[in-house]
Image (cartoon, rainbow, N blue to C red):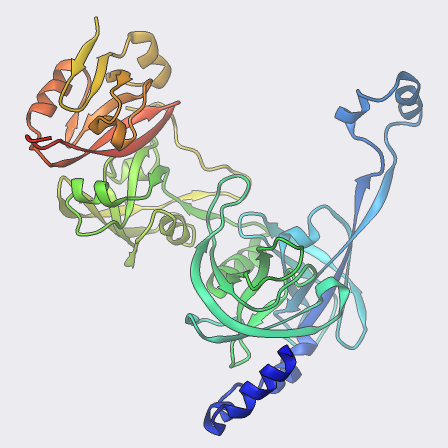
Length: 460
């Protein structure tokens, strides 16, 4: 029945609409010779590892120890890739070749080559391979951007079905999919192209036959495509491939800040017309951000000429800037926009981004609904603070509770006022206006956080 209905719908479409549907055949004919299937072998333990060994019976442990430990067996994996130069450089995903002991590249004409892994980049999930070949068919990586709603085409080897072709549209851009390490350097393209295991590392084309992305991930509940696939955009691919080809590793721009999103209440408290920007919760001591004059409480609205709508946009932009470059940043500080010159630092391939945690009798505050006391010296030393007030209790249904304040939080800033003592806090509260939304900076479990509290009106 579904097939009959589909045919019937196609039959009633105006001829002008059907005539304007894209013809993918010329793209496939031209591009397929440069798309490759990648066959990978890697070692894996055939028996339990060291932790599981402890749970084995004594006689089995002795057996494995006598044999020199758990034996290894070859694990086979497969993926896709594409040639980017006629002398044999090939792009694929990092996770396709991770831990490989052998990488074989198979071309459309069934020729096979042993490949060298030139370099990989786990943060972007990209890898560059090299085979010995000359005058090979190669693909061009697009320099321009792709638009939401634009037709795109994928070629790859899903489930080992060599050189399969699927098509769809770009569903969204700039999707943030943090890695297991919490890093977020790739603004993924989301498409509804049918991508399945084995498509990883394969190209995503526009209608000009240019590579606009590298297929990398899918969202699935069944193990197969449900119309949510994600590709690494071409500008990231170009940047990473160039660095891998030149040096075998990738260096990224780095600021050294901890950031968070701006919600509606925080936007109001900082004088913004709507939630936007990346709120700087913490600046690492001695970091590029610190040396460039960025401060905790700044909201970064633009960076290097690009608008920052959410906090996840910032690492996408910063990561592609060459270390040592000076760029401009527009920040909201104390209710006004300020332009800063920022010199971007560098984060090498084997480094992990971090922000130093060395940051710069009970009392009650009835207005906001908290019971506070000054943070003791031991706590301040542990957190690296010069001062602050400790939240002992939060009244139910109070402004503080509504804003998300919790017992154990250490408040270090209220609005534009630094808080080092209970007296500082009381004076800052005294300057608040009824109905005002005020930003609160606090330390929770060792990490900085901004929340917004709305001061109650007189009749509340």
